[in-house]
Image (tube, rainbow, N blue to C red):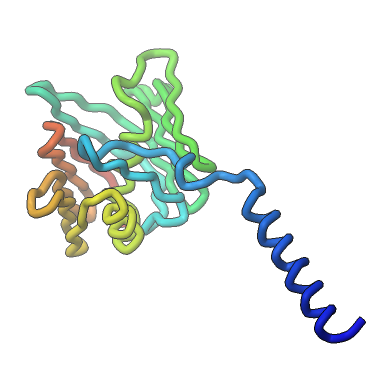
Length: 190
């Protein structure tokens, strides 16, 4: 076989390999879990590897929505492998569990149900605790922007602040101006 025929054969084999790889079904961007941050902004959840710092500890959660206040205790374990939030009562009994692993979010509880999809809680968690560069790119993909100073974050739709996050060593507060809710997480975040 001469050099020209070998080159053509090599190109055909490489072309077939590229075509085969492109046709193999896999998890594409459209299959990624998401949450609507605004009525037109579809935020695709980031992979767990984009977390800033692993978390493994007790947190007290205080939330407010439509003039009502709620509080609960949780054990949060989040790292590059995934996230588990176990809701516990004052005696330490498991009341429910939210998880995000291998590109899927789920919630299970024998006591109560969530009023929203678990992807929305995962999205808020990511806005608080994930790396700013990865968040910035994901938010830009859905038409939003991120301002990050380290101690605070603001998510904007054009020039309007829709979400504010204040972070300290022992507390993280998220206010969603657009959806009308807020919550504070208290724990050790360093």
